[in-house]
Image (tube, one colour):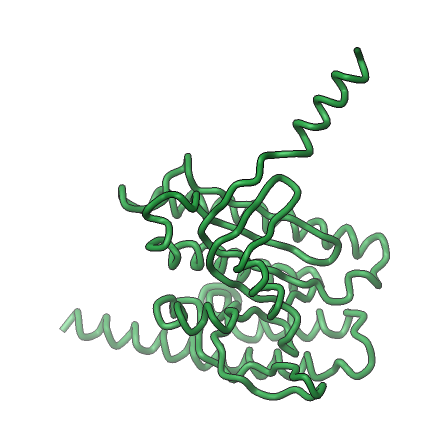
Length: 272
Protein backbone atom coordinates (compact mmCIF):
# COMPACT_ATOMS: atom_id res chain seq x y z
CA UNK A 1 0.00 0.00 0.00
CA UNK A 2 2.82 2.38 0.87
CA UNK A 3 4.40 1.82 -2.54
CA UNK A 4 1.09 2.48 -4.30
CA UNK A 5 0.65 5.79 -2.47
CA UNK A 6 4.21 6.75 -3.28
CA UNK A 7 3.68 5.97 -6.95
CA UNK A 8 0.47 8.00 -7.02
CA UNK A 9 2.24 10.97 -5.43
CA UNK A 10 5.15 10.76 -7.86
CA UNK A 11 2.72 10.54 -10.76
CA UNK A 12 0.94 13.71 -9.64
CA UNK A 13 4.27 15.52 -9.32
CA UNK A 14 5.67 14.29 -12.64
CA UNK A 15 2.79 14.10 -15.11
CA UNK A 16 0.16 16.56 -16.21
CA UNK A 17 -2.37 16.20 -18.98
CA UNK A 18 -0.91 17.94 -22.06
CA UNK A 19 -2.80 21.08 -23.08
CA UNK A 20 -2.76 23.17 -26.25
CA UNK A 21 -1.83 26.83 -25.97
CA UNK A 22 -1.42 29.79 -28.28
CA UNK A 23 1.39 32.15 -27.40
CA UNK A 24 5.15 32.51 -27.61
CA UNK A 25 8.20 30.43 -26.76
CA UNK A 26 11.83 31.45 -26.24
CA UNK A 27 14.67 28.96 -26.47
CA UNK A 28 17.97 30.13 -24.97
CA UNK A 29 21.30 28.32 -25.19
CA UNK A 30 23.85 28.99 -22.42
CA UNK A 31 27.21 28.87 -24.20
CA UNK A 32 30.04 27.08 -22.43
CA UNK A 33 27.93 25.82 -19.52
CA UNK A 34 28.97 22.21 -20.04
CA UNK A 35 32.61 23.14 -19.52
CA UNK A 36 32.00 24.96 -16.24
CA UNK A 37 32.95 23.70 -12.80
CA UNK A 38 30.61 23.38 -9.83
CA UNK A 39 30.67 27.11 -9.04
CA UNK A 40 29.83 27.89 -12.67
CA UNK A 41 26.89 25.50 -12.53
CA UNK A 42 25.72 27.28 -9.38
CA UNK A 43 25.83 30.62 -11.20
CA UNK A 44 23.78 29.12 -14.03
CA UNK A 45 21.14 27.92 -11.56
CA UNK A 46 21.07 31.37 -9.95
CA UNK A 47 20.38 32.95 -13.35
CA UNK A 48 17.56 30.44 -13.95
CA UNK A 49 16.01 31.53 -10.65
CA UNK A 50 16.26 35.18 -11.72
CA UNK A 51 14.52 34.28 -14.99
CA UNK A 52 11.73 32.45 -13.13
CA UNK A 53 11.18 35.38 -10.74
CA UNK A 54 11.24 37.85 -13.63
CA UNK A 55 8.68 35.83 -15.57
CA UNK A 56 6.35 35.84 -12.56
CA UNK A 57 6.78 39.62 -12.23
CA UNK A 58 6.30 40.34 -15.94
CA UNK A 59 3.25 38.05 -16.17
CA UNK A 60 1.59 39.64 -13.15
CA UNK A 61 2.15 43.10 -14.67
CA UNK A 62 0.67 41.96 -17.98
CA UNK A 63 -2.45 40.68 -16.22
CA UNK A 64 -2.80 43.79 -14.04
CA UNK A 65 -2.24 46.29 -16.87
CA UNK A 66 -4.71 44.83 -19.37
CA UNK A 67 -8.44 45.42 -19.50
CA UNK A 68 -11.10 42.73 -19.92
CA UNK A 69 -9.87 42.01 -23.46
CA UNK A 70 -6.49 40.87 -22.19
CA UNK A 71 -5.32 37.62 -20.58
CA UNK A 72 -6.56 36.86 -17.08
CA UNK A 73 -4.75 35.07 -14.27
CA UNK A 74 -6.83 31.92 -14.61
CA UNK A 75 -6.00 31.39 -18.29
CA UNK A 76 -2.47 32.70 -18.74
CA UNK A 77 0.06 29.85 -18.56
CA UNK A 78 3.75 30.70 -18.25
CA UNK A 79 6.71 28.53 -17.47
CA UNK A 80 10.50 28.16 -17.49
CA UNK A 81 11.94 24.73 -18.26
CA UNK A 82 15.65 23.86 -18.18
CA UNK A 83 17.10 21.05 -20.26
CA UNK A 84 20.80 21.02 -19.48
CA UNK A 85 22.25 24.22 -20.92
CA UNK A 86 19.01 25.16 -22.72
CA UNK A 87 16.23 27.29 -21.21
CA UNK A 88 12.71 27.24 -22.64
CA UNK A 89 10.46 30.14 -21.64
CA UNK A 90 6.80 29.93 -22.61
CA UNK A 91 3.67 32.04 -22.23
CA UNK A 92 0.25 31.38 -23.70
CA UNK A 93 -3.46 31.01 -23.20
CA UNK A 94 -5.62 27.99 -24.08
CA UNK A 95 -5.79 27.51 -27.84
CA UNK A 96 -9.57 27.20 -27.74
CA UNK A 97 -9.92 30.75 -26.35
CA UNK A 98 -11.23 32.87 -29.24
CA UNK A 99 -9.01 35.77 -28.15
CA UNK A 100 -5.82 33.70 -28.46
CA UNK A 101 -4.47 34.92 -31.85
CA UNK A 102 -5.23 38.56 -31.01
CA UNK A 103 -3.01 38.32 -27.91
CA UNK A 104 0.06 37.16 -29.81
CA UNK A 105 1.82 40.52 -29.52
CA UNK A 106 1.32 40.51 -25.74
CA UNK A 107 2.75 37.00 -25.47
CA UNK A 108 5.75 37.97 -27.61
CA UNK A 109 6.29 41.08 -25.48
CA UNK A 110 6.13 39.03 -22.27
CA UNK A 111 8.53 36.32 -23.43
CA UNK A 112 10.80 38.88 -25.13
CA UNK A 113 11.05 40.95 -21.95
CA UNK A 114 12.01 37.92 -19.89
CA UNK A 115 14.54 36.80 -22.53
CA UNK A 116 15.99 40.33 -22.54
CA UNK A 117 16.53 40.23 -18.79
CA UNK A 118 17.93 36.69 -19.00
CA UNK A 119 20.61 37.84 -21.46
CA UNK A 120 21.54 40.86 -19.36
CA UNK A 121 21.58 39.12 -15.97
CA UNK A 122 23.36 36.19 -17.56
CA UNK A 123 26.17 38.47 -18.74
CA UNK A 124 26.39 39.98 -15.26
CA UNK A 125 26.92 36.42 -13.93
CA UNK A 126 29.23 35.32 -16.72
CA UNK A 127 26.55 33.22 -18.48
CA UNK A 128 26.33 33.91 -22.23
CA UNK A 129 22.91 33.28 -23.78
CA UNK A 130 21.90 33.21 -27.41
CA UNK A 131 18.49 32.15 -28.63
CA UNK A 132 15.29 32.73 -30.54
CA UNK A 133 11.64 33.56 -29.90
CA UNK A 134 8.68 32.34 -31.95
CA UNK A 135 4.90 32.59 -31.78
CA UNK A 136 2.12 30.12 -32.48
CA UNK A 137 0.64 26.91 -31.14
CA UNK A 138 2.33 24.67 -28.62
CA UNK A 139 1.39 21.67 -26.49
CA UNK A 140 2.75 21.56 -22.95
CA UNK A 141 2.67 19.27 -19.97
CA UNK A 142 4.68 19.48 -16.77
CA UNK A 143 7.78 17.94 -18.33
CA UNK A 144 7.29 18.37 -22.09
CA UNK A 145 6.69 21.10 -24.64
CA UNK A 146 6.36 20.82 -28.41
CA UNK A 147 4.61 22.49 -31.32
CA UNK A 148 5.15 24.67 -34.35
CA UNK A 149 6.55 27.67 -32.44
CA UNK A 150 8.87 25.40 -30.43
CA UNK A 151 10.19 23.97 -33.71
CA UNK A 152 10.72 27.47 -35.11
CA UNK A 153 12.56 28.64 -31.99
CA UNK A 154 14.69 25.47 -32.02
CA UNK A 155 15.55 26.07 -35.68
CA UNK A 156 16.97 29.53 -34.98
CA UNK A 157 18.20 29.54 -31.39
CA UNK A 158 21.76 28.48 -32.23
CA UNK A 159 22.12 30.01 -35.69
CA UNK A 160 23.26 33.52 -34.79
CA UNK A 161 26.99 33.98 -34.21
CA UNK A 162 26.73 36.22 -31.15
CA UNK A 163 25.20 36.64 -27.71
CA UNK A 164 21.61 37.79 -28.20
CA UNK A 165 18.13 36.74 -29.28
CA UNK A 166 16.30 36.88 -32.60
CA UNK A 167 12.72 36.45 -33.70
CA UNK A 168 12.29 33.29 -35.78
CA UNK A 169 12.12 34.18 -39.48
CA UNK A 170 8.38 33.50 -39.87
CA UNK A 171 7.50 35.23 -36.60
CA UNK A 172 9.60 38.23 -37.56
CA UNK A 173 7.88 38.62 -40.92
CA UNK A 174 4.44 38.36 -39.34
CA UNK A 175 4.89 40.29 -36.09
CA UNK A 176 8.20 42.14 -36.11
CA UNK A 177 6.79 45.47 -37.23
CA UNK A 178 4.10 45.39 -34.52
CA UNK A 179 6.38 44.79 -31.51
CA UNK A 180 9.27 47.15 -32.20
CA UNK A 181 9.43 48.43 -28.62
CA UNK A 182 12.05 45.80 -27.71
CA UNK A 183 12.86 44.37 -31.17
CA UNK A 184 14.76 46.09 -33.98
CA UNK A 185 15.62 45.19 -37.56
CA UNK A 186 19.29 44.30 -37.66
CA UNK A 187 21.73 42.47 -39.99
CA UNK A 188 22.11 39.43 -37.72
CA UNK A 189 25.30 37.37 -38.25
CA UNK A 190 23.87 33.95 -39.15
CA UNK A 191 25.70 30.69 -39.77
CA UNK A 192 24.73 29.37 -43.21
CA UNK A 193 24.97 25.88 -44.70
CA UNK A 194 28.49 26.43 -46.04
CA UNK A 195 29.71 27.11 -42.50
CA UNK A 196 30.29 30.79 -43.21
CA UNK A 197 28.69 33.59 -41.22
CA UNK A 198 26.64 36.05 -43.26
CA UNK A 199 24.46 39.02 -42.25
CA UNK A 200 20.74 38.32 -42.56
CA UNK A 201 18.03 40.96 -42.01
CA UNK A 202 16.06 39.80 -38.97
CA UNK A 203 14.46 41.22 -35.85
CA UNK A 204 16.94 41.24 -32.97
CA UNK A 205 16.10 41.68 -29.31
CA UNK A 206 17.33 45.04 -28.00
CA UNK A 207 18.44 43.43 -24.75
CA UNK A 208 20.75 46.26 -23.59
CA UNK A 209 18.63 49.36 -24.30
CA UNK A 210 16.81 49.46 -20.97
CA UNK A 211 20.03 49.01 -19.00
CA UNK A 212 21.90 51.62 -21.05
CA UNK A 213 19.10 54.15 -20.48
CA UNK A 214 18.20 53.40 -16.86
CA UNK A 215 21.19 51.57 -15.44
CA UNK A 216 24.86 52.41 -15.40
CA UNK A 217 24.97 53.47 -19.05
CA UNK A 218 26.75 52.04 -22.06
CA UNK A 219 30.17 51.78 -20.41
CA UNK A 220 28.73 49.64 -17.61
CA UNK A 221 27.08 47.20 -20.02
CA UNK A 222 30.20 47.13 -22.21
CA UNK A 223 32.39 46.37 -19.21
CA UNK A 224 30.13 43.49 -18.16
CA UNK A 225 30.25 42.05 -21.69
CA UNK A 226 34.04 42.24 -21.90
CA UNK A 227 34.42 40.64 -18.47
CA UNK A 228 31.99 37.83 -19.34
CA UNK A 229 33.72 37.07 -22.64
CA UNK A 230 37.15 37.12 -21.00
CA UNK A 231 36.05 34.56 -18.40
CA UNK A 232 33.90 32.34 -20.64
CA UNK A 233 35.24 28.97 -21.88
CA UNK A 234 34.68 29.86 -25.56
CA UNK A 235 36.45 27.42 -27.93
CA UNK A 236 39.19 28.66 -30.25
CA UNK A 237 37.62 29.90 -33.48
CA UNK A 238 34.55 31.33 -31.78
CA UNK A 239 36.00 34.78 -31.11
CA UNK A 240 33.70 36.23 -33.75
CA UNK A 241 30.80 35.81 -31.29
CA UNK A 242 32.35 38.50 -29.11
CA UNK A 243 33.00 40.79 -32.08
CA UNK A 244 29.43 40.46 -33.38
CA UNK A 245 27.96 40.96 -29.89
CA UNK A 246 29.95 44.15 -29.35
CA UNK A 247 28.91 45.44 -32.79
CA UNK A 248 25.26 44.89 -31.85
CA UNK A 249 25.86 46.57 -28.50
CA UNK A 250 27.18 49.68 -30.32
CA UNK A 251 24.04 49.62 -32.48
CA UNK A 252 21.85 49.45 -29.36
CA UNK A 253 23.75 52.37 -27.82
CA UNK A 254 23.06 54.51 -30.89
CA UNK A 255 19.42 53.35 -30.95
CA UNK A 256 18.98 54.25 -27.27
CA UNK A 257 20.58 57.68 -27.71
CA UNK A 258 18.24 58.39 -30.63
CA UNK A 259 15.16 57.44 -28.58
CA UNK A 260 16.29 59.51 -25.58
CA UNK A 261 16.85 62.57 -27.79
CA UNK A 262 13.42 62.08 -29.41
CA UNK A 263 11.78 61.94 -25.96
CA UNK A 264 13.61 65.10 -24.89
CA UNK A 265 12.43 66.93 -28.02
CA UNK A 266 8.88 65.77 -27.33
CA UNK A 267 9.01 67.09 -23.76
CA UNK A 268 10.37 70.46 -24.93
CA UNK A 269 7.56 70.78 -27.47
CA UNK A 270 5.00 69.86 -24.81
CA UNK A 271 6.31 72.60 -22.50
CA UNK A 272 6.20 75.16 -25.32
